[in-house]
Length: 258
Ligand SMILES: Nc1ncnc2c1ncn2[C@@H]1O[C@H](COP(=O)(O)OP(=O)(O)O)[C@@H](O)[C@H]1O
Ligand SMILES: [Mg+2]
Image (tube, rainbow, N blue to C red; front, side):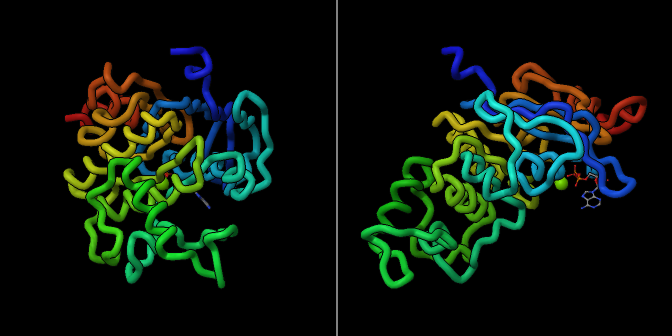
């Protein structure tokens, strides 16, 4: 592996963020690296979503630094972060159930050029591009013409992720893509997450599913506890119990891990 590949593309350093009297993040640091999947784990309220919103430019930290491709940046907001090449997929997915996969993939995209006419994407071109991106992501099994409302939770999640890829990002942030999914659906999302990393993307994924998702599909596990860094593990060299211990901390670990 070359040095370039092992350098982080996105780093946060010493991030602190309070909401009124609530300290959501205290001096948190994290690195995302091309070709690697980082799991962000922690109990409810640990600060995971706040950290992702800081990365995606939705929240401005009170303190700390944001580095992208080796340079410090001061993102003005979510559009500026997306422009740098960082896409975020939120839990609610924002899919339209009464539209098919092709329509959902191109939803809200302001496309110009020869194949854009009268405010609508030409269907044939959209289908071609949709088929191309789904094939690249090994999602050929997804129907282009079925309403997404009739699809499984795993397929819907994967369409939402595929949509973010149409912007050709360098970094993808996924806030709980496996929440409310069955184990087999979560496994489908796991396959896609690893596929993204194999294309050189840096991926961050929030998940509570340590045993069935995080250990199998990620490279690094970053633990937050009470708004602080509480452990960083190689996913291949750690047990679920060690991760849970870091999440809950102290004596509570004995109970929670049992
Ligand atoms: N917009 C907000 N206003 C007030 N408090 C917030 C807000 N967002 C998050 N918090 C608080 O910050 C802490 C971290 O929340 P969050 O980042 O959502 O944790 P997680 O995603 O790990 O469950 C919690 O105590 C939460 O109540
Ligand atoms: Mg959250």
